Length: 98
Image 1 (tube, rainbow, N blue to C red):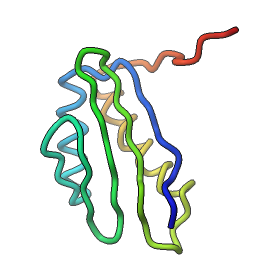
Image 2: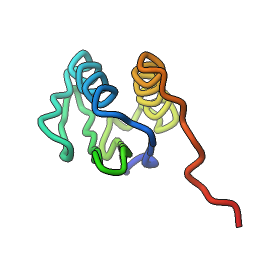
Image 3: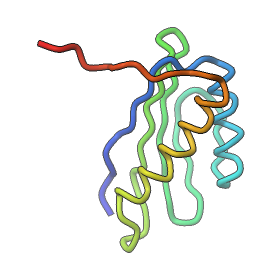
């Protein structure tokens, strides 16, 4: 399957990033640094956490053909948003109106 749409989050503090890393471990995804990729159970995800900007980009780049990107991204988004909510982080708009 081709790559799913990239998910991007802002206001990701180092504490929230640590929570996201711990949540990924529960899904058998080992995150060894601020950027990279990992595979588990037929899924491959890539991520980049920019500590200075406090942004996280996350993307499933490979998955079994029978699992839709909408389902994958919903699962990833729910996991990340749970971690952000635990740290009382509110997302802000990343698109500047024209």
